[in-house]
Length: 300
Image (cartoon, rainbow, N blue to C red; front, side):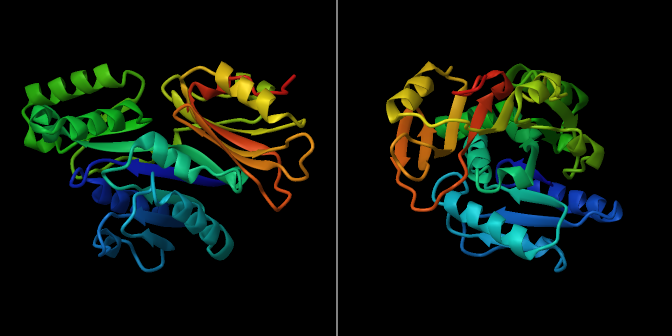
């Protein structure tokens, strides 16, 4: 199992500084990191900060949470096939929504090979205090990146007074009361805080109930193996019964009367069925809040 971290945050928040610091700590510990960098521009400026011996994949002119979703899957598969590494770090663009970034990373094709540790969001503390100057869309994304973080870095605290620092932490806790909030300068985060995260739920009910997932890891993912075949109507009826806290489901569903499991995708209340010409394993990935409490169709 390869540990995977998603680094989230606006452009200029300090993500790349954090990346360099974490890569250094991983190497000092004898672990081999790999990096996927997702940038909206044509030139990979940030990737110049990554050492040559670190396996690096870049996705330019596309966002990890939209046009880049398939590219992300291909990049991860390529890394798993061609590179020796222990830890994968995916640095998302500042425009990436955390839930959609997680969705792009977690494919049923390689879910059993990856251990999604969590989303680490770097927030510019000064920008947080000045967020009223942002457009409504940008301010909303800023809040979403903070709300869905498993570990939150209130960065650039050196630019604030003590009173301002306390205000930032208090207000961010109001948006995300479950995440651990660390005040940082230059994105310096101790590796042990990242290693303590765990956003991937286990696959069996017994494991789920006993797993120390941690109360602060509300946004999580789960891989489930389907034990039976269903009609499309039966499966969609189960989908409709799910709470709104389930944001995404994707995978391969065995359908009665059809030879190969069909590719199924669910997002924003919409479902999509796509015929599959290869006999893929009947597994689905669920992404949402407190996902370990959700019962999967056909489970006993």
